[in-house]
Image (cartoon, rainbow, N blue to C red; front, side, top):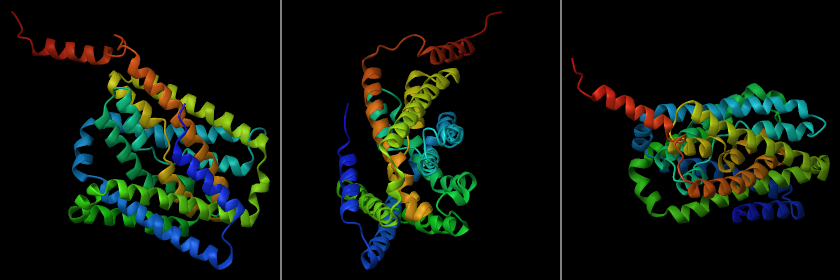
Length: 338
C-alpha cells in the first residue's frame, strides 16, 4: 500500500520542530510567515476554483447534498459519539483533535484521483470536493465554535473573526481576481503546487514548535497513539461502508456511488492544518496529529479500494437504479395504445 511522499515530508518537518523548535524572536517570525502563507494558500484556492464549473455542478445537487451531509453531519455525529472513548482509548486533547478531524472539509485531489481509477463519476467528484472545501471555510469554524467551544484551545469570537480574515477574505479575493490571474495560475499549476505544500509545511513547523516549547508532547504515549489509530481505523471503515451502501439505498448508480464514497469518506489535510493553527494556537500540534494520521490511512485504504473497483465487473445490482430509471423513462416516452 502506498506511502504518500508528502507525509514523509510532514513527518520530517515534525522531527525538525522537535529538534530545533522556533523560540523567541524566531517563533514570532515563523508565526508571521505562517499567517501570510495560510492567507496566500486560500487566495490560490479561490483563484483556481472555476465559478462556471461550480455552477454547472449544481445540476447534480442530490449527489453534492449527500457528500456534504456525510462530511458535515455524519462525520461530526460520529466524532461526538467517540467522546465515550475518553479516557480508556483517548486522552482529552487527542479526542479534541479527533473531533476537529470530523469537522474539516473533504479532499479534492485524492477524491478525483481515486474516483478516476475506480471508473467513477469524475466531474461529480471534482465539484463535490470543491463545494466541500468552499462550504468548509464557513461551516468548519462554526461547527468548531459549537462543538469544541472553549476546550478547543481557546476558541472565541475573535478566533472566528481571524478565520474569516485569514481564510475567507483571501479566498473571495482570489475568486474576484480569477478573471485576470486564472490563466497564470493554470499555466503555473505545478510550481504553485509546491508553494501550497511549502505553506503547509511551514504551518506544521510553527504549530509543532509551539507544542515543543509548551511541553505538550509529554501528554502522548505510544499506547495512546495506538488507541488513536484503532479509533480512526474504525471511523474510516464506518464512513466507507455508509457512503457506499447508503448511496445504493438512495438509488445512485455505480459511478455516482464511487464518487460519493471517495469524496464523502475523506478529510482534507490541506484545509484542516491552516484552520487548526488558527483555532488551537499553541495546542495545534496535538490537534492536527489525528488529522495527519487519518490522512495517510485514508490514502492507503482508498488506494486499495479504488484498484479493486477498477478490476471488478459492474454487477446488475450496481446499475439497478440507473436501469430502473431508464426503463421508466422509456415506458413514459412510448406511445400509448388505445
